[in-house]
Amino acid sequence: MQQKSKQIIPPSHVCVKAGFVAYTPDDENRKIIILNSGELVAQKTEMPYANVFSMRPGDLVGVAALLEREQFKYKLLATKDSEITIIDEDCMESELKRLPLWLLALIRSMSSKTHELKKAAVQTRVKNTLKSLAEYLSKKKSNCKYLLFELIQEFKFLTKIDAKIIEEDIKSLSRRKFIKLEQINKNICCTILDSELLSIFSDYLFSEETRSNSFVPYKLTITQKKILVYITTIDSSIIKSGPDWANLLHEKFSEVDVSEWPNLLNFGFFSKSYNNFFVNKSCVNYFLKALRYETNIRGVI
Amino acid sequence: MLLNKGDRLFSEGDTRNELYIVISGELIAVSTNEAKVYRPGDIIGELNLLKNELCQETITAIDDVELQIISKDILDKTLQNQSPWIKSIVMFLSERLSASIANKRNSDKIKALPSLLYEINNQSEETISLQSLHSSLSKLFNAKCCDIVFLLETLQELDLLKLHSDFIYIKNAALINLLYKTIKIRATSKTLPQQILSIADQTVLLAIIRTVQQSSAPLKNGLFTINCSDLLKVAKRSMHGVSLTMRMVRPLIERGIITLSESSATELENVQFIFGDFENILNLVELNRIFPLLDKKLIE
Image (cartoon, rainbow over all chains, first blue to last red; front, side, top):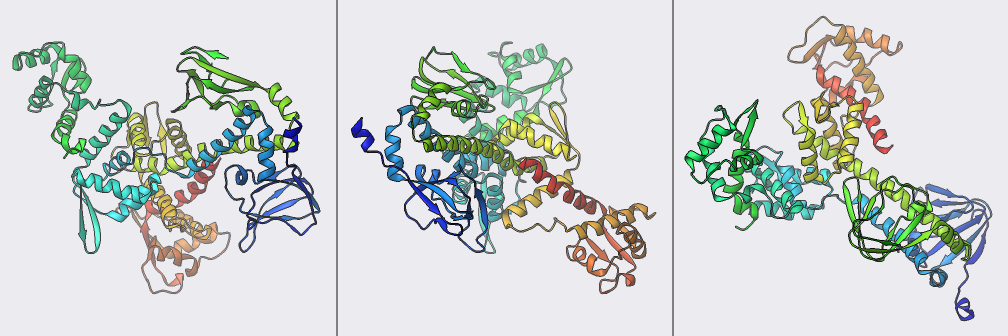
C-alpha cells in the first residue's frame, strides 16, 4: 500500500494575479484546470479576443483535452486574484491507477460516449448513402437535364453526406443506367432516365437492409409472374368479386387455385371497391418494372 | 445480478438510482426509433445514477446476463476516499454527457427539417399520407419518427399545414417552397437569403398589401396595380407620419418584388403606378414572420 501511495503525483496549486494568463493553448502539456477561488475568463486566441465564458470557483476545464486528446482552445485569463489546481497527465494517470476498476470504466465510458455524440451531431444520419441518393433523385422529373453540381449541392444540404461519397454513388447509379451523365457547355449534366425506377431501387435497398432478400417483386413464383403479366392486359375499370377473379384466373391458369387469391391481394395487385375488386395498375406496373430491370437493380450487369 | 434471457432490466421512463456494468451476456436497448446492444464491459445508466435522470431506454436481456450493480451509496463512499477533484471530474463528465445527448437530439431534429420540406415540396397533392412521408424520410435521411412528428407539429403551429390522424393537409405549398429555398440558400451560400427582408422593407410591403386590399382594382393573374399616391397616403398612416421615399422602395425594386410605371423616376411623387405579384408579397411577408419563429422553436 505504501508503495502505491508513493506513486501518487499530487496536483499543483497556483495563484494567479488578476490580469495574468492562467493557461494558453500554446502550452503543449495537456491539463485540467480547476478554479478554487477568484474568477477566470476563457478568451478566443484570435482578434478581437472575445470572451467565451467565465469560470466561477468549482468550475473546471480541460477534461476533454486530457481524456479525449481534444485541445482546450481558449486562453484563460484571471479577472480577479485566483487560486487554481492544475492536474497534468502524470498526476491524472497516477490518480486513475488508484481508482476501482468500475469507477475508471465509468469515467472512460462517459468520456467516450460524449466524444461519439459530439461527432455524430455534426455527421450525417444516413447509413446507406446510395439508397438516400436514389430516393432523392426519384423525386426529380424523368428525362429532365439537371446540372450535376447543383444536384450534389442540394443533396449534400439535405443529408450532410460528404461530396466525395455522393460522387461515388452518382457513378454507381450511372453504371446501373438509372441516370445519364453528359458534358454540355463545360457543365456536367445529369438526366434522370426514369424516376420511378430510382424509387423502386431505393425500396429494394430498403427491404434488403430491413429484411434480407425480401423485396416482394423478386419473391414471386413463376405462376404469380404469369398472373402478373396476364392482369396487365385487363382494364382497371373491370370490377369483379373475389371468387369471380379467382375463377377467371383458374380458367386461364389451371394450376392457380383459390388459395392464391389472398397472396395476390397482399401484393396489392387488386384494390377493393366496396365488396368487389379491380386491377391496381400502378402496383402491377411497379412489379413489372422491378422485374424488367432486375439486373440493373441488383447491380449484376 | 443475474438476468435470464428475455428478462427486462428496466423500461423507458423508469427511475433507477444505480448503474450496471455488463459482466457477461448481451442486452438490447430500445428507445424511440433506435436500438443498440450492450456487451460485456459496457456501462448502463450513468445518468440515472449521477443525475437522477429517468431511464431513456427499455433494456431487455438477449441471453443470460450477469451485471455488476453500483448504487448511490457505493459511489458516494468510493468518491469520499478519492482526491476531491475526482468527484468534480465525474460530475463534470456527467453534465457534459447529458448536454451532449440533448444537443444530439436537437441536432437530429434540425437536420431533418430540410429533408421534410423537400419531401413536402415534391408532393403533387394537397394531402399527404403520413405513412408514405415517414417511409420516404426514412430512406432519404434515416429520420426518426419522433423528429418528423415534432417538425410537423412545429410547421402546424406556424400555420403551414394541418395534421390529421394519418395524413397531412398542406395549407400553403408556395410558402413551404419559399421556406425551403430560403433555408437552402442560407446553408449553401452562407449569406443572408434575398427573401429575408429588413424591417423597413417589411413595413413598405405591409403598406403595399393594405393599399391593394383597399383598392377596388381587381388582380389580374395574381398581379396588382396600385396608384402610387394611394400607397403614399396609406404608408403615411401606417408609418406614423413618416413619408415613404424612393430610397425606402428601391431595395424592393432591385429584388424584383415590385415594379414602377416610371422606372427612371427619382421621386415617388413622380410615379403613377406600382405593380407586383400579390401572392408573392403576401408569402414574403409571412415568410419573414415565421422564419425567426421557426429558428426559435427548433432551438428550444
